[in-house]
Image 1 (cartoon, each protein chain N blue to C red):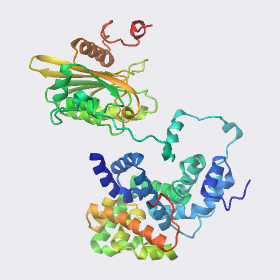
Image 2 (image 1 turned 135 degrees about the vertical axis):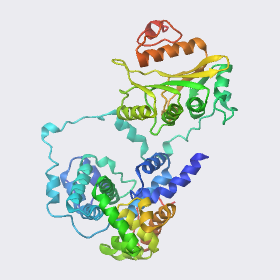
Image 3 (image 1 turned 135 degrees about the horizontal axis):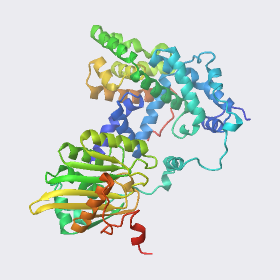
Image 4 (image 1 turned 60 degrees about the vertical axis):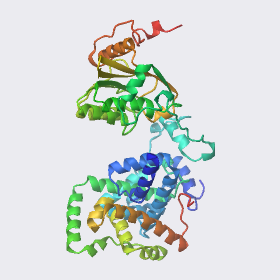
Length: 194
Length: 312
């Protein structure tokens, strides 16, 4: 058994593939906090978020080859899994309807209340800077989609903006954030920039 | 040209897609596109990395969660079976997807069969006129499936003179344009009869769902023939013409699947030969209604007379 604390994502995935429980424990140590926090934020339900964490790590245990280190970080992979599962659950859930009604009412009363999904609750440093440099419309669109679990069409309704505009804002906002994070000295992986 | 349009259009969706903020239909469209577009795949991965940064938190997962996961990992020795190879052929499908760009062949562009090249695109009856002039042998994947067999079926769906379409489906693509064409034909009041093979390996579940879709549109669907796997690739189009009813046949070695038609080498014959068409109609009657087709006939049909009628 080699030291796993310093193992790369790829090495960790290989060890998990060999049924090494300590490798999964290391992946959990590194990423479970974020996975839980994201699921909790989307679902606003602690028990549901814990189930998502279990699902995501058990899937990593049973199918570690689904994570491809050439294509991105394990962190992004696990969070994308957790996000997709949370959103599926949300959309299938009856509580969804209640939330939508609440959100719609909020938009009518005061559109600025939508900022309840603020990002700066948990972030620090470079990220905060990059986020605050974002035009507010892009930031809101991303917040509502990513943390609110809304489709861009729903976001368009919430923000009273055209669907096409919201679609573009999400994309341009993510690109701007990436540039901002890179400028702030954060090494961004995943897909070549060329 | 439409592929360029859809790339531009789908590109705009990539941010929302990466955040799971698209509806199921759009998700399917984006994923279809991603399979063939490395640039868009890379962009999605970049967006996901950014999103992962947004989800940053210094906090740990709740206490006890790891222990609950760890309790589910244990496998008794009896549960573990070591195997030297792959568990299923499906595993091989994953192989070429990763990297090795330099070892891939350049994309193959199929050409339109010369007999079909100058047909009026807006005229659904044009392909039938060309088939009447003489049989057309299509050689896939060198000839385009879209401008030959798919066009044959789409024309049949659109052509007001067509009364009936019969087809066997063994395997077809997701959101298949063939299924769309058949649904369209049924909606226009044409008789549509389809034999769906439900034991097609890897495709059992989708085949049942297409079957249901077609039935909803008004098609007559038969689900396989008991105790035989229906592997025949046969299509029959019945047309009302000035001099009476005429039947058109496609008989081929390849599935009605626009995806595999770009990969697999297959032959397909488009014909208005009355004897061939009459026998094809009889084969359909056997497949969908259990009325035995006459043997021998112009077609050799297994399990009746394919073996005995083949050269040894």
